[in-house]
Length: 371
Image (tube, rainbow, N blue to C red; front, side, top):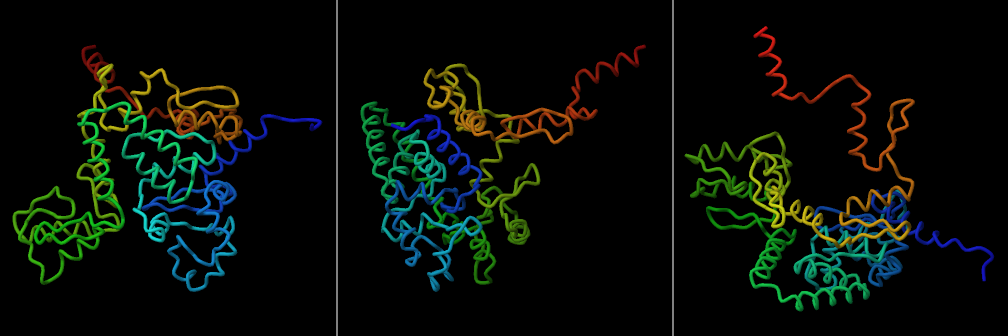
């Protein structure tokens, strides 16, 4: 028996590694999925994923890498470091394994989190497919068992056919957004392109005839003439081809623009069935519904704190890890666990008042003139 044993050391170690993963600090691996990526540590990944362990031990194969130069000189992969992280591409791994590609960033983030804390909330039926695909691709046996249990639960619930239809539609939408697919279609000739830039180049070809005056890029504009349509296409000639009609924001994909547009709308189509509160986005409604649930899905194994919200749980973990945001003003002792809270605090050190109630202001003006 050891002379002294501190039970909190393993928990603190895992919590510290998980916090480092969130910030990319001391991480030597970047896992790319679609246009996003997550950070991780080789030591953690190699313990749970035999597929990645083989990749780390035999980097000469350069499997999962899109660096053509490194494929020509595979020895370069033997010297990756914190300053030169190893980059792994999920799509390339799927191609090598002859598996269906998974491009759901949310599910990859959940899978990597599972390797650090042993907890995961898989989500709806479509996400079960994503998590299961990633677990098979990375050969994470423990996670495959979790997915099978989730499938058994879904069967037991005997959900209505409409819910399964919605899940299938969500899955098909996800497939359309994969990098390997061609989601941008020319309305004039039906030609499909992988990117908006490629479609724009296609529309500008001299031999191409714009028989449709509707914009094939944004699908939101209909011109009165072909000359007017070509003038409109100039607006899409940008590194971020999709633009908001209500503000100056620009986006790389049509889906990102669609996600932004509700900001300028007063409509709240997603309504809570328990309290009637409406939301602009479906994910906002999902987060709100957790308020009505007695189930707390996140449990701190250090102090026993529980919460239904992932963002609140992450902020709580930062307290145990000693990560905080301090006020930069000299002499101020204010400390916050969220950067947003710190940004709200900083204006208290100035005499500026950014927000003024228009109702009260107008009442004072009326009183002034009446007197």
